[in-house]
Structures are given as C-alpha cells and as structure tokens.
Image (cartoon, rainbow, N blue to C red; front, side, top):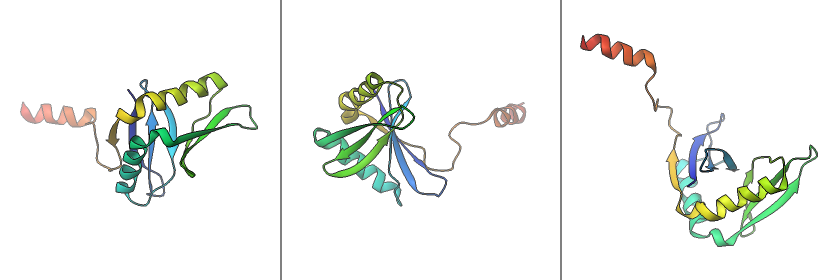
Length: 127
C-alpha cells in the first residue's frame, strides 16, 4: 500500500508526495504555507478520489507525466515516466491504494533516526 508523505521544501513551504508500495514517488503536490493544509487536502483527496482526473502529457524529452486534477483544480503533478505503460501503472496505484493509504509527516527538522555516533556515546556512557 502507498503512503502520503508530508515534507518541507527549501523555501519552508510544505508539500506532500504519494509514494508507491515500493517507495517510489508517484506524484508531488503543489506548495502549502501551513502543514495542516496538506493534511486537509490529502483527506479531501482520499474521500473524493472518484472525482480525480488524470491529464496525460508527453514532454519534449519524450518522457510521460500526468497532472492530477481534483474537480477542476490542479492538485499535483506526477514524476516523469519512460513509457506510457509505466505512467498507467502509476495511475492505477493511486486509484487502487490512495483512499486507504496512511499519512507520514516528515516535515519537522527533528532527527527521526539516531546516528551511529549517538549510539556509541550512549553505549560508552552506560559502561
């Protein structure tokens, strides 16, 4: 099952991506000023996925991508795909799993995993 991942852009605005079961990014949202706006739009998308439209394009470099529309509003843009078949598989992953995917928030600047040095310092302190 895929996941929605909230993170921050370099300009401190928020965004979210939808990742596949294998961890590949399928699409990236537009920017949001506040984190809760990401969460609200994710929940709105999950509840109204049947309203989603996928506008398919072929870029000048020969790669395929889609713009995800929710109603008449541009919601997100996909990553680039080398073939139209892979693009279609990305869309199928969204339709199949997005409504029941979890939301992961990686937008804070806190370390999620300890680095090795911290673990070694803790072991030395215990001894």
